[in-house]
Image (cartoon, rainbow, N blue to C red; front, side, top):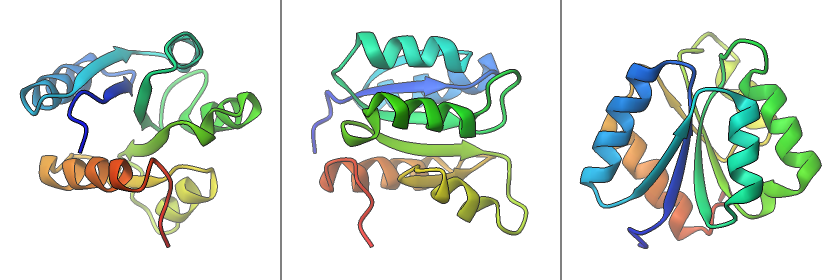
Length: 131
């Protein structure tokens, strides 16, 4: 496992960014963050070394589903692993997230061990979903 993997957190809640950033940095990951999908896309385009994207699916203006469309339009889904991090836990929400092209799903409130397991799974599978 490459602990120097860069992880980008895109979440409109600074408290979530702070908590996730701290926990991931303690585990040895390089962490970048932003609060909008537009900023997230700029990071992804300008920083090709990002390996994992933690994407909040419920953001104002451009949500995670729309950001996934933008990621696919840019062809970035081939180079990064995307984990949906969301409070959307109604029936069908997980599948809708997976159908949008994400490679993993973690519900809020986040269980750090579950998130770390998803990150490690994506790193082992080169960022792509293993069926």
